[in-house]
Amino acid sequence: MRLDGHRCAPPRRTAFRRPRIRETTQNVDVRRRGTVRPIRHVGDPVLHRACAPVTQYDEDLGDLVEDMFASMYAAEGVGLAANQIGVDLSVFVYDCPDQNEEFRKGVVVNPVLVLPAVGERRIDTHDEGCLSVPGQRATLGRPDRATVHGFDTTGNPVTVEGTGLLARCFQHETDHLEGRLYIDRLPGKRRKQLLEDYRRAASSPTAG
Image (cartoon, rainbow, N blue to C red; front, side):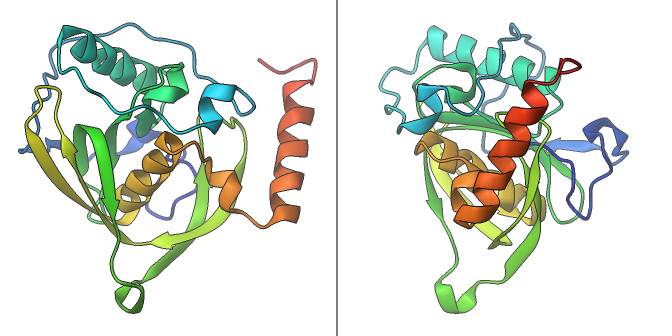
């Protein structure tokens, strides 16, 4: 998920000056570095099917998470699902500001998203972008609060509550793991136009 276009966000994620804070319930080693992997784009089959649950909490999973963080930062994102780098596993990472513009960082394996009851939801309607649909954004309403339950890379249970952009990030990334892009939530006509704009830009001689 990209930071661009949200009301609390300047164009680049690095422009925030608030200190980042770690999610205390999670086991995230911020000292380790992974390998940047290419981001998969809309149309790649791995993005359009539900991911398999993680069953092994081992060194390979830790290496994957390191690569996911490295890839997310390289692409200037605030969230990334495993299938966005071609891995069919249910895990996402994030380093994203909440409604107080404080960065929260973590990983959730096999996430289960919980939203407020319909009668208690407040819908936040703002632009949303995606690393897998580069160069495009669209206005999309989502609940302004969300909770995810899951596990860290060692198999310990975690629960993380998100507000503001962080809540949007949780919803965006769990959508990815279910094989859905944010553009799939748009009205048909708007989705078609966005994809046409994306393909036109991607085929431009100046693209890349």
